Image (cartoon, rainbow, N blue to C red; front, side, top):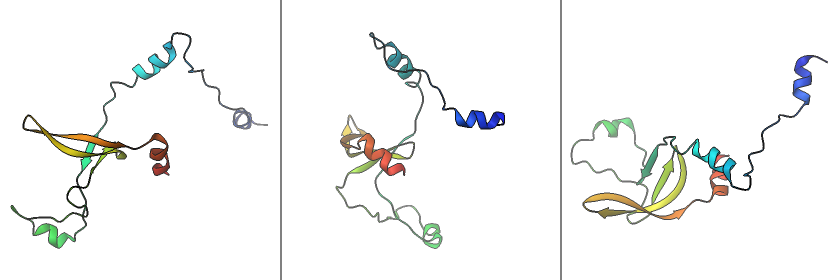
Length: 112
């Protein structure tokens, strides 16, 4: 048996990350990722067009999207759909009110 065979046969060992009585382990592991930046994007709709039509676009052109008016926006984090929402205006600024959050199990199912 080679050293590589011995490593392949033994399972990987990981530290227990279950919180102790004070919940410290969970707080420490969560604190490590709370400041990690993620890309949040909102999708109003999509369309496909040939490059010929793309090159003809100019100021005032209208692009028809596959989504109807009044349908919810898709909210993505790092390219993964996490919620649906609607546009709101607060103090002359746009925002999004989340109307539905995709469950963690559904997010995992969509990754496959």
